[in-house]
Length: 227
Image 1 (cartoon, helix red, strand yellow):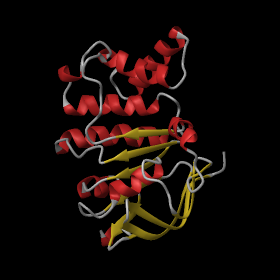
Image 2: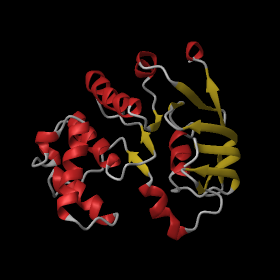
Image 3: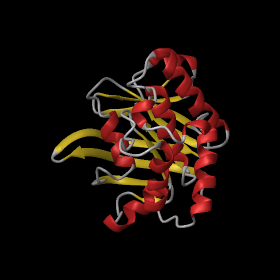
């Protein structure tokens, strides 16, 4: 694995025939924490979807965790996503099963077969997000912040090289947002790379990191004072 986790050169992002973003060139190194900011509709989610191959890369070149986004085959997408941890705004937990079984479902879907190893891994990731005692709870029994912690634990299951967090605090109140952010900070400080789309400027000021802005169909780095 190279030190470069993500590299894009002259990339354009399309949704169907509509050009959303253009002329994107950037590099993210291992261990960085990078924000992607911008107004609603500025292309943040489309940018993130391109990174996990939900939107195909049609123009420019890009590599992410050693996968070539431009020439990615459909059959390779599951393997790419195993090297990524994806955290969504709306948690995407399965409501009909408890936390442990939500996580077990993901492990089975990604090829795990040894039940003992699965249980050990589940306990490990829940511990990392401070939710070790909540494995038997169902999603509806958890607060929004707790559900998002579980979603982060789920993203950690396959030891991803990169975590993509798309508005992970978007549905949370300010105090809970800070708690979830602290979890992400800890994960980053343990060496994991994180790219986080957000419109929560209070968090960016509280936890400053490299910041990319989507504006006027471009993506460019901004200095903290200019946000």
